[in-house]
Image (cartoon, rainbow, N blue to C red; front, side, top):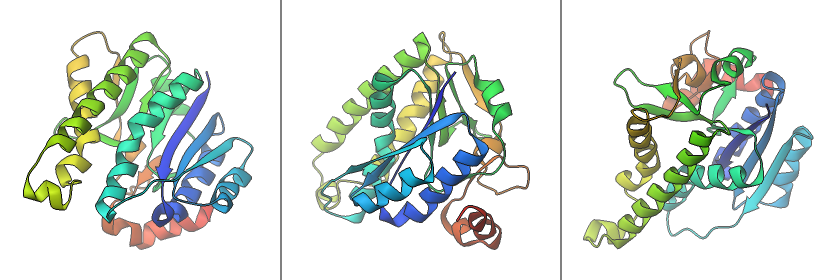
Length: 237
């Protein structure tokens, strides 16, 4: 099987993306990497592709009206990349947030997810953690992507159609920013009752608490400035 890691970032997350890509090349050598660089230049593309021949980057120019709009685009771009890459290759597709660090070999992750349709980390309360999503090239995995795309298109149309003062001032509210995550979570919950072979991954594969046994660290908010995270970043800088 082939594996392709997907991610998106703009210049504010580029330093983290470089680390994620370098750590992937070292600890997930079975994979190739495809990243989308939002409103960045050819030099940034060159930096990523010089990390390894397995790394490809594309620059996407997008006009934003505000910071929240930019954040929403980068977050919700995940579904488009899944759809785009599935049409271009038959690899197992793995979304990994740009600010993640792959700290340990992923042999066990490959073994665990080899025969599933979809895999992700599930929080204690049952909702998905979106930092690492794996979709295999299976009949149900591909149908899952199609339904994921369809639902997000409906959500985007609904959000654009809303006409309130708050939406007019800032069309990218928290609700919209989380639409991709919520859509993914609801879809997994519904399809797990059907024929979808879903695997709930251990928190080690999207570790937001930065534990020593974490395979993939996913630092959030203030943890990005924590000494332990910065020390790990330096290993791949």
